[in-house]
Amino acid sequence: MKPFTFHSPQGLGEAVDLLERLGPGATVIAGGQTLLLAMKERLARPSALISLAEVADLRGVRHTGSGVLEIGAATTYAALAGARLPGWHAEIAAVAGDLADRPVRTMGTIGGALCAADPRFDMVTLVVGLGAELDVVGPGGARAIPAAEFFLPDGGTVLAPGEILTTIRVPALPVYTGVAFEKFRHRVFEAAVVSAVCAVRPNGTRRITVGAVHPAPTVMADGDSADAGRRAADELMPESRATTQLRRYQRELARVLVTRAIARAQDTSATNTAAGS
Image (cartoon, rainbow, N blue to C red; front, side):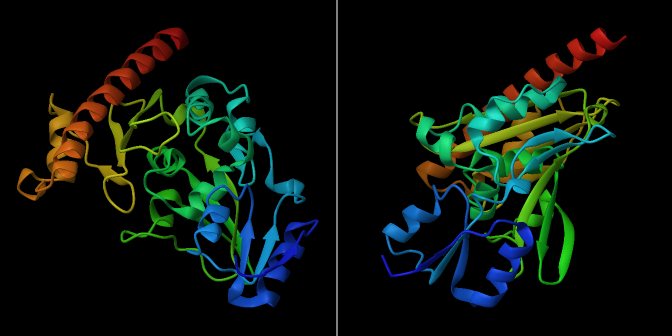
C-alpha cells in the first residue's frame, strides 16, 4: 500500500473540513470492506483516510414523526439486520442480514456500499427500488438526492468532491403496501449476478427495479401485462443484444427474479391490506 495519514474526526463538520483541507487525495472510510481491498490491490491509493467511526450522528436507525425511516450512512449491515422494523420496512433488515458473510455484515456499512456504487451490491438496488432519498453534506452545504439519480448511468455517483453521504431516507409505510427483494448469487458470500425489487403502491401499480445487469440499477416501466418478468428482460436486455453466455444467463435470471419479486410483493400487499381493513 502507498503510505497514508489516518484521521479520526469526532463530528461531521470536522470530517467535512478535513476532506476539504486534505484535498483530492483524501478518502472517507467507514467499514472499509470495499476500500481496503481496493487499496490492497493498488486500485485505490489515497494519501489520507478520514474515518467516520467516531461520528455518532452517522449511525443508527430511526423513524421520523411522519414515518420516514432514516438510516445513518455509517450504520453497519449487522445493526440494520438487527433492527425491529414494522411492515415492509422489515424487508430492508432482511436484505441486510442476507448479504455477503458475517465479517462483512459486522464491519460493512450501508453508506459505504452506496458510495462504492457497485451495481451488484444489494443495497444499491434496494434503495433505488424503494425510491429512497440520500442526504449528503459538503463544503457547499447539504442537499438531498433521489437514489435513482445518485448513481450515474455509466457507473459511479454524483457525489461532488468533498461531499459525504450522511443519511438514507426510506419512504413511510403508506407509500407501499408490499415490498420484495430477490437476487441470485453463485455462492453465499458473493455479490448478486442479478437482483430485483418490486414495491406495490396502494393503487396496485408496481415499482420494479433490476440491479447488477447495467452499471446502475434500472427502474422498469410497469404495465398490465401478465408476463411482467419477460417484459422486464426484454426491456433490460433485448434478445438480439444477449450475445454472450453471461448476458443470456442474466436475461433469464432477470425474467425469473422479477416474476418472483412481483409475486411475493403482491402476496405481502394482499396480506397487509387485509390486516389493515
